[in-house]
Image (cartoon, rainbow, N blue to C red; front, side, top):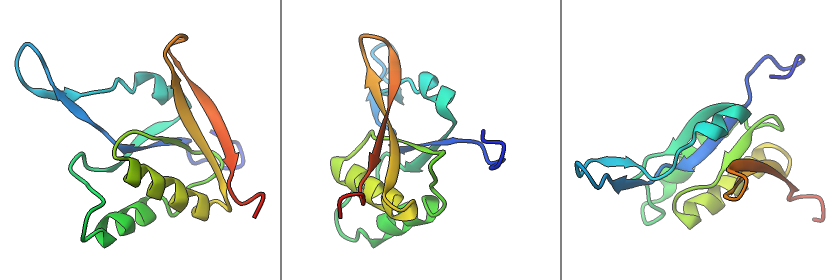
Length: 123
């Protein structure tokens, strides 16, 4: 949390994905997001059933609504449908003048690495 901005950092997860548990056939999250909590409060943007096919205005409106105050203190964790991931990055960048911070899982080190981008810098 930033002293000048009392709002806690957030980690926006595009979409959780599920798999069947081998022992009891229940649906469980495909990923363990525990390490991502070190970067901020976890917020899932879309349901696992969300898809980019028509009508897609509802999905875009939902992303726009949830990311309207995305800031330099927040992160994107890009899991889910690739098209929904693209829309999420575009909407977050628009909300924050092109600047986005993302988390990339590093399997060797078992941790997330921060990746920063300024998508409007060269426009």
